[in-house]
Image (tube, rainbow, N blue to C red; front, side, top):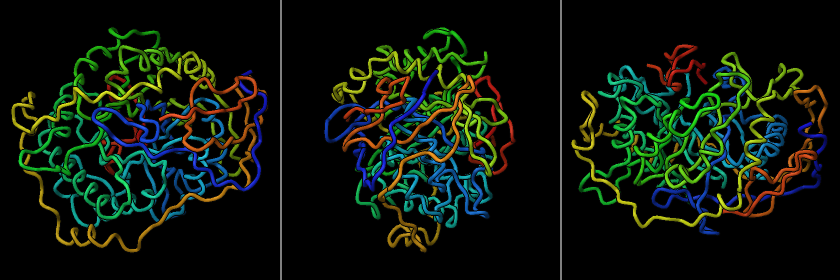
Length: 468
């Protein structure tokens, strides 16, 4: 049995479990411990794109009781970060952010959504790059900037998926990156990384990375340069290998990167059930010098069949764990996490390339680094902040227990709760007792999913999955 019970944590607690991460060269680092950070992430978007429903005041981080349930289960799994795709900046996220913070988990936030006017149109990006769109992205920043466990923001997700979109989209994604970073610099009391989540389409992947990670000549502090670069990759399927999956090619491609690289999605679902044999490789010696971990796709089961947990309807909210959950936990538990997460920072060989046409090798991919001008009125929003201005803060949680029924894959009912971690601690694989579920943590240092016109089901990297 995966879990039989868990410690129940009561009493008002204002937990400060995580230290805000920073980017140094090609790594995320904990500034307190000066150690490199590897992402053990989970894609978290219950209900897919339908889980974002502003008309009914609903998004994935708006229900504190649901977040307690899921944070408790992810704490047992060993997750230290979640990626959330579609959020409403006008809703209050304090309880959910505080729960994940107490559980030792960071949040990677996408600023776009599937709704009209809330993402770049990959077919005609110039038509969607305007003041109200940027105001909405800035509002997401405002809503999440004050949570210490906000790791970073994605300015775009798979907006470039072909040579055709690579011809027109890159300057606009880079412009959104510039605008977000300028907004953060003006309105946040700390620097928060901004980057891009790419499709693993080899005809445009390397050019996308080179386009976003270089520094424009003459720009002393190039605000349009991405702070991180990630990719949604499904090339490792079943009992594959470092070479058979093409992971060796990715390591060779990104070697010498000047920004952190990680998987923003991974976890091929064929064959099923999944075996997750890529885990020891992603966190092994062949990859950790270049990659900073990755985000498993995904927590909740949807029609695309990638979920680790079946979620009942809204009136019930019970959870049944799938066998994939236990398999993933077992793979994580095999890791020597103390060694992995305490690796020394290495920035001596990091060189930021200067943007030039010679960086772009693909025929038809945009090699012009002249970016779109800021739309009228947007500089005023950057200078004075969005209005109305969302706010967010870590709050006291009086009860970390889970109110919903949890069942494992064998049909046994489980008791779980969030166990708040100590200051400067993050959740870690292998620190959870497989019997009790107790977590101790470790002190560490067109086809865009964001496009309103995206199809309900798409093929990326040889696999078919639905948009979130």
